[in-house]
Length: 461
Image (cartoon, rainbow, N blue to C red; front, side, top):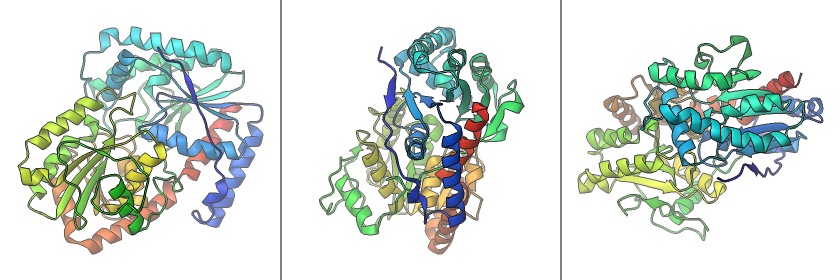
């Protein structure tokens, strides 16, 4: 079995946020970060999750923690190890937390596998923990570390980045499995108040919605010419690459590139049933394929680059099978892309270029704790059509900063919303502009770091 690993964090100066944030907010942000470093003196702040790349938690940690390091926080990011059985079990728990059954019947063997792996990780990690350290544990994979790290003298908070507005029997079964591990945490962090589980102490609840890093390669401004060069270099479009050194995407099925004049409807998500990629494909094939200038793009990470998602390959193959069922002329306008994961910044650059190129961005999630790709597209002033589920409904104000579809399974409703924006570019532009402003006000990294600073001071006390 592999070993627990520490992710190297390169400091990033917070001065980069000057000019992005209003001046008074920037000054407050700087003071908070500096004062927190002083109050946490001689304590290490640990973040623990299950992967260093792929998915929103890894991306969030990779973008936020470098600012904390720069301002003097002693921060470490540890990635736990696990085997195939462990990640199959935790993916099943993840699905159950979203109200859907695991693809395999995991429950008879889940506890033995889960305890074996988390106890092995705890044995490696606890010797590094000093009394008084503060630990932020992320998501179900690492919840089994809460008890051992508290026994080692740390103050521990557990953050669950997934949740359901209306839990069902599957959700409660996952809660019952995890609650004995989670209950010991000093604080529970959820992205929405409604996500707190039955049986957990409300007094220990803290609500911290996620954010995006406007300065990261995924969200930094790109000129139109640069967008075209990146997409050509990555093999998404035909044309000059401007000498851009970048890996090419892997195409599933077809080899036809996006035409330069195409209008693009995009979804960027993992290969995950809960993102409903098949529903996204059917939306186009059944309702929008008569628009011959409109192309559909679903872009997900390379399935070889996301270690904690064993279902990715199966979901990708299911999407490919659906694509193969389309008429040849529709196949040419539907693009399934695996974006390379060898270099995180390279991956982010390709995704950013796709989002900037899109005429409409869709997030057709069945459940979504918080859609980082929603805020990313909004920051780029893209009009977004998304399911009215979970944290998405906190990000988008319907018909003001995007469009929400009440039923995530309603492919006709999604198609109508997308079509309305394709038919009215002025409205799409207004929604996109309002979307950018909303993200600036509510969903950028400094706001989340300030909330974490408050949490850490509370834990340290």
